[in-house]
Length: 296
Image (tube, rainbow, N blue to C red):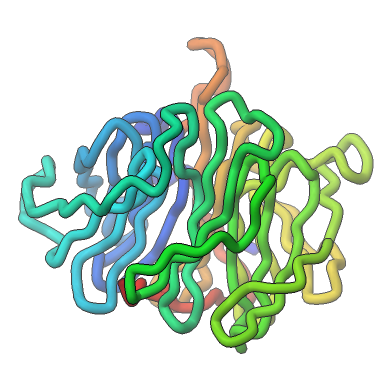
């Protein structure tokens, strides 16, 4: 692997959910609690565009038909076009009906199946145990519960053949795996216990992605590392980042071999970890998978 680079500086408070897509010309991610979408072109050398979409922006994914879908507090929003050429997004942002009414529950992370089905999870603002849910959003507008009684629904990524999906409920300290049968996730079971440095099970797996070999990269929040586990659950690579709170990771770039890592300064003193809130990048050996656009 190459040397780790800070490609943005600490321009976000809680950077999350990185997605690399050629339709955006680079990397897009959220500054979650600011309610903003941030887009980088190239490796950041083309500057950053920031768009405000609401009081919270949990995740963003491109749509097959054009535009994007973004997770707000308790509802999804859609656009038909992507870029209006300004730093402040002023295009149509069509709000779908709220998925739930409890004001203390919010969206968190998401994943998209090879069929274009959006899976998105929720959590309680105080991380109340079991208060979250992983939902399946069908292209026909249907909403189904895939997993309930989760606490911090986090990263979700599919294997290259689409047969499996890896999933993290952060406080469990492990990554689980589902079978993907007829575009529905079933048979959830443990895949790997994440070691954050203080012994097995101490890690906090956050956002994740899957590479072309079916290995899982996951940010280990609170430990300042990103891990790669092969398909057998063996730890094969470990990337250290200066901030203690990496939040998510995504393989991108023209050859899908740049690992982008978002970080947060949530709950940190003002004078601590000056690089927290930055995006970091490092070149890796195995490429990732192209982004799956949402069929919604």
